[in-house]
Image (cartoon, rainbow, N blue to C red; front, top):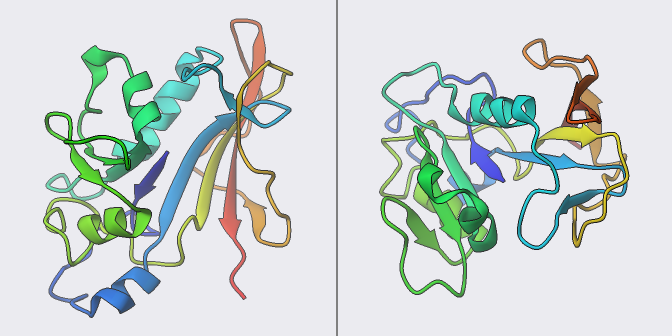
Length: 199
């Protein structure tokens, strides 16, 4: 799942960053939040293969925390991911929910529907209707930061996360991300953060 935020978590002024759409898009930074097991599996039959409360809390913290209480992060997800969320939790609270789908005919209540990632980013930044309501990601290229919950087990999955290219991403330390190994429901897991290498 993707969400947008400034590199330091601070809000930015739309007036200060008023640019052409092309320049805005070039300076967007998206953060990818994902949990994957040893074989890079992330899902099975449209659902998470595990239930880890600490991981869910980590996801909530990463995607909701802002320094400006008047703004929210935007969360971009596909149709299957959105409908895999229990109905009572849809849409995700305290976040602008943007669904990327070519199949949905209309947006579910209190969400925005887009057909491409560029359209989602445009909606969430200076040229879109949500621009004044969310924290704008203005720092780097798409998918610059990956928040990875690494589940230390082999689990049967039918959906997989791409292998990280060490030439493109480097592991980094974040003081607000714990480094310990945790255990829940018989599964060990840890949190890792990767930044896209800037050339």
